[in-house]
Amino acid sequence: MPTAAFTTLGCKVNQYETQKILESFELKGFRIVSFDSPADVYVINSCSVTHTAESKSRYAARKAARSNPDSIVVITGCASQMAHNKGETLELAHVMVPNQDKLDTISYLLKSYPELEQRLIEEPAPLNSPKLSRRTRATVKVQDGCNIYCSYCSIPYTRPVRSSRAWDEVVDEVKHLAAEGFKEVVLTGVLIGNYGEETGSGGPDLPELIEEVAKIDGIERIRLSSIETTDVSDKLLDTMKRTPKICPHLHIPLQSGDDRILEAMNRPYSRDYFIKKCKEVIAAIPDMAITTDILVGFPGEDEVAFNNTCEVVEEVGFLRGHIFRFSPRPGTPAAVMVNCTSEADKEERSKRLIELCQQTGNAYITNYLGRDMRVLVERKSSKSGLLSGHTDNYIEVHFAGSSSLCGELANVRLMQKANEIQLGELAAKPLKESRYERLCVL
Image (cartoon, rainbow, N blue to C red):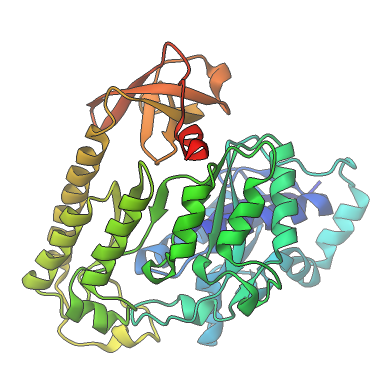
């Protein structure tokens, strides 16, 4: 039977969409193989948020062509959409699928290559419905589209239509995932705080959706993907306090800690607002961890502006920071801004920020040394040779244990850090009282 291979660049939304595209190929009769293997069809779900992401998308297409020169390369995602917006084609792409139609990629492929459909008819696959690979954490897209138009970002041009999935459709999907054995779901969206009736769900808002998902048996943890500061409402915080299954972890993008740069970025908050909101979150939720995104080298960023960003990192105390260097995205206002930061300064500042975020992360983790924490065991790490997983508040821990624990929740005592790995050991006894039980009592 025909074979298909998939790779994903970029965000959790893309990862979720790739899984749905893959399942549609399986249902049609394709055999799914690794992207490193020879395949009849290679599907690349691309990203355009940075120049590096676009380069990786092009590299994936070249890699596919090398693996099988006779293969069909299908490219969808934001890089494909950006090329479509400019009336261009992507090198080596035989089929380009617009973002809004990416879940119908199989139809685009078979319309362009009807001989493939004939092969599927002649070489039918077994009539078994596709099964998700066994994982511990599943991503569920609940929202799409963005209308903020940050001056550096291409996403509003590649995903311009805001939409929310119907809440009962989301609940049904999570029930299916729970039946498959998943214990944690990550609710994700391009602008997840925008979820609600206004954008087409016809039902609850994000906090109310969380409460519905929390009612599902088998789901032990609910985590949110990136959420804007201005969408961290009092209602959301109250829901997090009252809902035991929601993880005490939020990813809140900072981008810059300087008001002048934030204004030039068209970000909808000030430095002081961001700090105040983060402190409110930390005060409201026990064990809360905050992770973030920071953009280094935006046009006009001088040493003073960069130092202001460093000060915010230290004051908030992020567990982790994802540091990106500014790269102009065609068609965005920032692409034509003057007073650009040199590549040398971008590199030097990104290194300093990475080191600073590591320091704040280590300081955060220090508070939990010697404490028993609930860990969802995810895999055996190739880096340490130990089991690894994340605590509720997103501390990655490596510890010795039986591989039979993979996919299970375990109580792990956090020990010391060694070679940039946080080590732990299985707790001798189960926790008498978890954060969740304490919340229920409260």
